[in-house]
Image (cartoon, one colour):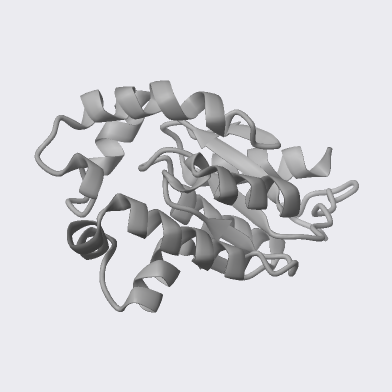
Length: 183
């Protein structure tokens, strides 16, 4: 007896032959969704921000404070270039990584790029849970996120795949990504 097991054809997971890179605004869920996507696809997951912190032996906030955003973006590009080594994996990037043309070109030319998008209210609620966002320090998160979205969303739209991150379980976005990868 099969009980509650599904019957019929089981959908195959998509074949992934190169890195998958998640881009989007802070708070959209790139790291959380990326981890879950990696598990579902049986691929390693790498958080570019964590790799940057490891390489610099300091936090993102400390890098911003000590060296400024331009130096951070240069280090970010170098770390992402190292991570995009042709081997399939899931990579979560920082919100500004895709804005730098050399980094964006690297991602667009060598990976499956996925823009995770969400409403500003959803993002503001999510980023309010953490206090380590250098671009939000001492500012109104909704205002900053609206301004960033106005500038960044047209650039994020260059990504190969666009998936909405709704105020629902992150597995909803993971499922949407897997479905988009099947096409």
